[in-house]
Length: 606
Image: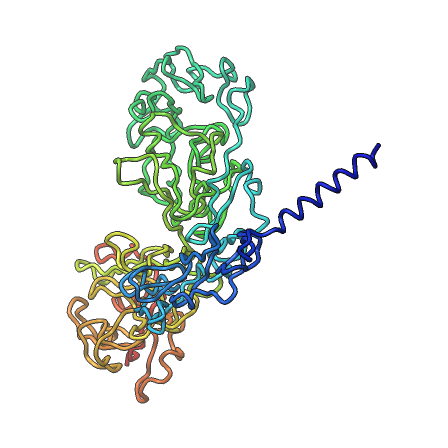
């Protein structure tokens, strides 16, 4: 039976082949466009182009594609000079981004060549982000293989539900494609740090919330206490500033701020041991970390428990809150709660959320997709007091960066600067004050931040930029930023400034800072001989590290015949050039001053 069926089928196939091989009598066989074979005048077929190229079709360069009709498609070709930005062209005469930034540099002037490429010989300070390598401060590099995201980085690696992680334009990881796991609120069980769950109040009453007038404590749907039916009374409470330490604060004083989600407050003076002028005030009270607003922890002062800020050591570094939540060390050395949003990425401004909704946000409501990993969330300008914003540049370890012990981990186009300054007040010039060391990531060029000029940080002694240890760009000198006569740097940080003309020599009289050369500034000429601290002659003096007073290397090659010392700018103005200030009205009141490490080579006292 199989043989009987097979014979007719063989005949039919053979007959069909004979029909297909027949021509139309013209002597030419029909084209088969799409078979990958160039035949009968086809210029292309699939990926076959023969001798046909962009160049043979009148273009300068590029890649052809083949259309469905086996005709070349020239959309991938480019012709430099046609006033059209074609694929593969970096620029086109007046079109395209013709800046050094587009070419991967921070400063300078780029030129569009006749080949529509960028000539970067006039560009300086290469930009690390986008170079395909993982540089300090980068979590990824968007030009690297597979989009720059390291293979071990996933949504799950930071405790989020599966999704897509991408590398953003600042070479930071963006987890916005991930999602937050559902919390425990609403499962009928009082757990996960919740204050309450439906009718389960954990045994708490209005009195526990310091509403001593009684009433009915209830639970909000978000598992926080509802005190709207509780009654406050003045008896047994305190209020105002200063309040009476240890007493509950009168609840009604806080209803305008947190009307529907009031936290109990207690009077405490946590700063008394550090500042004798500190005043007792009302802080949220607590029994555990879960009782505190998001980011605060339960601390103790003189036996009183309150919600406060946890301290830390190094700004910019990771820290862990006592509540177990992740954090980063802020500029004021407090451990700030951290999420996964990075510089420039959208975030939630919880302060504005609380103001708008009148509901506090607690630690058990932590959402890493709403919080910045290292910076603060700056609200959008429109609408005013928006609950949404973008993460600012993070704080940085300015002392470590200058010393070279830690890399500058600021975002691209930003560098770490120490904002410490020495202030000279006209009414008390012999009592200079130095603000604490505080590292900030500041923009390196103009235009990144509104109303803020760019600053390229450098070390005034080594004359090297802190960014990638580069020299200042051509035509720039590293000089200490000085506001004449009343403000001086509180560190060895300087800025690369553009100069014009020939700088003055060391020791020459001057009137402006930029008149002096690299690593020098226009300062008090001879501090040891100066009597009037408000009106004194100035000269160009070389900067030095005031940690070494005599035989300072920076002063070693200065003219012989004079004993040169490195004197801290603080000691230029102090009584007897020491580091103490004595109150003229109370000789027993002696204040020890904090000197700036920035010094200048000056003639020693005779």
